[in-house]
Image (tube, rainbow, N blue to C red; front, side, top):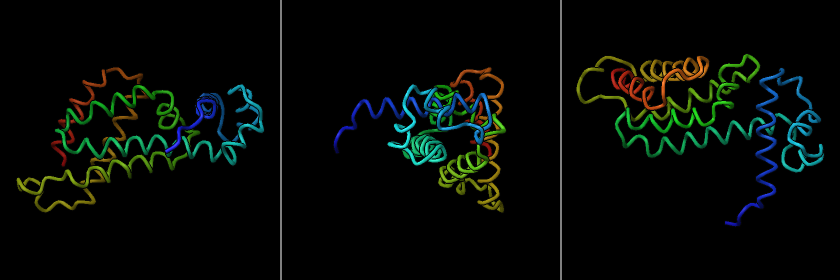
Length: 182
């Protein structure tokens, strides 16, 4: 696979950062291509070399984050809850601007939260304890909805409140709660 030109990567990163920064300042619908170009310090035409429009840019940014979480799901299921969740909370911490904008902002597309929830619910499918008997009579869909919604809600709370606890402490706390739920 050929390496992508560093200039292209640098431009795309600048544009992704610009859209998130601008979303913290104004409604997404009010952000113009010129706003993006000015913030990223590129020409308007450069944006169209990489993206169809601002919606395509935002969608690609969201997709990249969800893909990264999906890759984490592949190996995290082999670990116990507390250990598996540390990299997730560190990821949210590292990408605070993105997640605080996408989860805490009323201006962010509501589809993001829905897609994030679906991603976690998919990852939790193989985690339901059917062997111990403690989940006898419980419906998988209800358990997945409950655990996924709780997990996304805790992430939102943590981010909205300025991450008052470390990523490791959050992983420990949430790991215990998810272990009890699934």
